[in-house]
Amino acid sequence: MFKTNEYFDGKVKSMAFNTTECPATIGLMAPGAYEFGTSSVEYVTVVSGRMNVLLPGETEWKSYRPFDTFIVPKDSKFKLEIAEETAYLCLYK
Image (cartoon, rainbow, N blue to C red; front, side, top):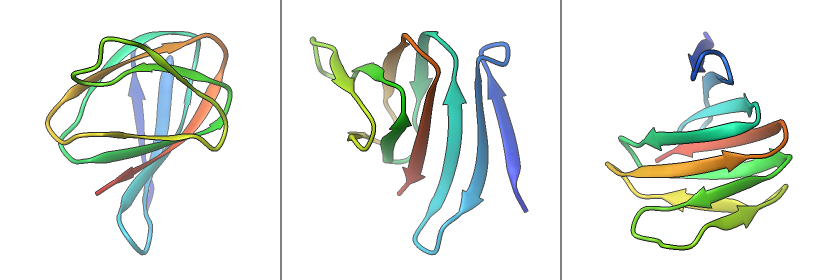
C-alpha cells in the first residue's frame, strides 16, 4: 500500500504512493542541508515552509515557498537548505 522512507538520520521522512498519473511522495524535512540524487524527472512542490534549492548546472540558490514547484532532471543531484520545518509533494515522471 504505502511505503515510508527515512533519510539523514530521520530529518527527512516521506510516504510513497501512486497517483493516477505517476508515483509520488509526500514528505517532511527538518532544518538542515541536504543533497539528493534523482533516477527520474522530479516535480517538487512546496506545501508549507520554504526550500532554498541549488539545481544542477545552476550557480545561484533559489527560494521556493508554498505552491511553488521546481523540476529536477533525471540522473542528477540537487542541494537543499531548509531553515524551518517544510512539507513537500514530489511527482516522479
